[in-house]
Length: 465
Image 1 (cartoon, helix red, strand yellow):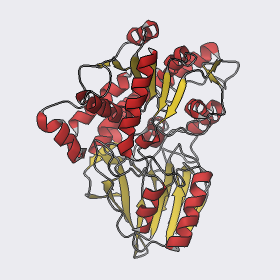
Image 2 (cartoon, one colour):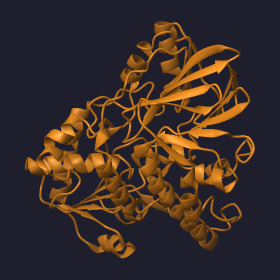
Image 3 (cartoon, helix red, strand yellow):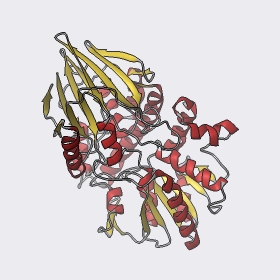
Image 4 (tube, rainbow, N blue to C red):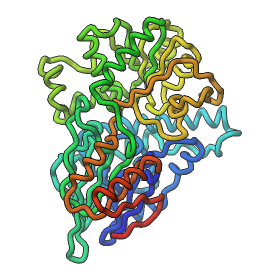
């Protein structure tokens, strides 16, 4: 058996790990790379395998684009095998991939028209909305806890990862030459006590664990403090007459922030200012959330559903749809809250709002999620950076910038340590989905405390079990 990381190997985006078993080749996720545009475009456009001939199945952990975003490209290049995932992930993927196709088409149109000299040649979008629609026929929904067989001698079970709605970790049983091995894959591991969704399940006994390491050397703020910090930012910015801009992933993070704003409003702990969710994608994702109450935790029922209330809609909230509605916000004075995608500021309507508002000191930009290296979001939260480039023009960072990392959907160092330490029978730990400065201290702690072999593969490195 071989494991090859084609993405998220000593980096955080582009998750794609290949298992070679009994002559079959199975992918665990197939996500988009993000970062420097030219570099990301090159990585995203090429596979180190022939999708039509080499790959037999895909097992998908969740519907974030850095895990699901290149499945339409697999389809476009001839892949016709199954894509196994939870039912909630299947519904979310349909929405996310359609939006991804739209962004690919619009970005290609913009770059070819305005930035052709500074970009690679225009060869067409990575994939289209039609590719996204067609590839959905490959998706096969599965229940948490049920075993299924993507390839001969290879059985898989989904367990709740607690990261986003529908997210799963994998327990895999591999049988070769009459010998059975158990392998685990964390996917993106969530945190206990996050709102809306259930806490992560425990990983059962496995001898090899492929584990994310996004925050392998960082402690998050307590999730209980996040709502209070958000309240303080809103009150402070409203007094200045400014706008609170929140770049947020349309999937999960937007719903979590609206959930907390609803609680603050019900408790009369925030001013009555408009809350604009400027993301058609967020609207569609929220509809999917309401279809899958089986993923919710107890707090969601106690606070809202048990009383017949919609947690994602209240009097201050407005969901925009049209481009004209979005543009009209530029001329609308504050105070107000504008939440828009994407979370790392690499695409979507948030870039237009940042362009118009980042040089106004009355405003506040609130980062509520991980910002990968080389993204616009990372440059905005970096205190050493005073100028950022948006749509090929430089802007001064005059708006207040606040980072509330308590909202992170990823396990922090304490969560990761506990997760790995409680896995029985573990002999080999393979760290992925992390930058070296986070992975290496985590690896050192596990070697010392757990006594296991730890590997941190580079892209295309082959690990034999």
